[in-house]
Every structure is written in C-alpha cells, then in structure tokens.
Image (cartoon, rainbow, N blue to C red; front, top):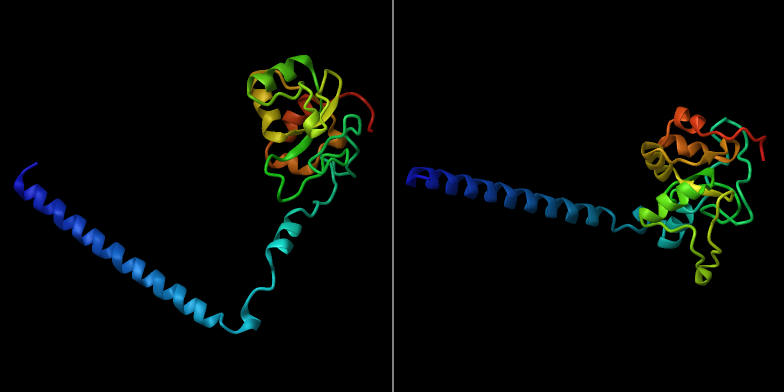
Length: 183
C-alpha cells in the first residue's frame, strides 16, 4: 500500500467514524425524546412481564392439517408441548412440537445420533423413554430433517397441528401419513 493509499484509507476511516458518531448521537437524542414523551403514565404500556409470558403461552386454536379439530396424539406416553396429549402449540413453542408421529426404531436411532435421545428413560423429568409404536408430538423441523435423510416415521395427520405447515409441506406430511382411522 502506498503512502497515498494509506492516507486515503485513514481519511475514509475518519469520515466513517465521524458518520457513525453522528448517527449514534442522533439515536441517543431520539431515545431521550421518546422517553420524555412517555413520561405521562397514561402513555406507558400496561403489559408487564407476567402478562407478556402468559400471552406467549396462550394455546393456538386446535386445528389439524386437514382443517378439522385436532385429534389427540398420545396420553401414554403423555406428549405435546403442553403435555396435554395433543400437538397443540403457542408462540413459546420455538421447536414447533406439532407433528404427531408413530416412533420407529430407525427414527429413534436417528434422533439419538443427532443428540436428542428420546428412547432413554429420564425419571428426573418424568420421562419413561419412547419405543417403536409410541405416538409423540415431534418438532416439525426434525420430521423434515428425517424426511431428507430417508428415515421419517409415519404421521397421524388428524393429530398434526396446522402450524406444522409453516415448516413442512402437506405433500411431505401426506407421504408419511398413517392409514389408520382418526384418533
């Protein structure tokens, strides 16, 4: 780099730093003005931390991917984000535990390999461990991952929450649909 190039780079950095400093000062002034405007108690939002958490835990409407009422997935073992036996979901369910699947040995081994051991009992959490044939509310992204790897378990469409469609297409879900009646 020549002396002239270094000088240009220094000037650019200086101009960039000045612009950044100016932007930061403006942002601080805007925050201060907003705080001043909100000084009136009637302008302060009434939501507290507890009500925000409660709202995030409100159950979404219980509809399945077929457009009808969500059927139970399993109560033995008890499953679901809410541990109510259904693949119900809410804003706090970041894993989207919305797909009701019937476990297979192949899928359980796949899940364990990926670090989510669903077959080993964890009594400290009241979890007896899953075995082939058990129904379980699975994270939609895990089903999609298993589909990509060729080891997805069967899916009970009647018990799969409609929010699963935000992650997994209906075509993929139908490809693994059980032939069992609703329930």
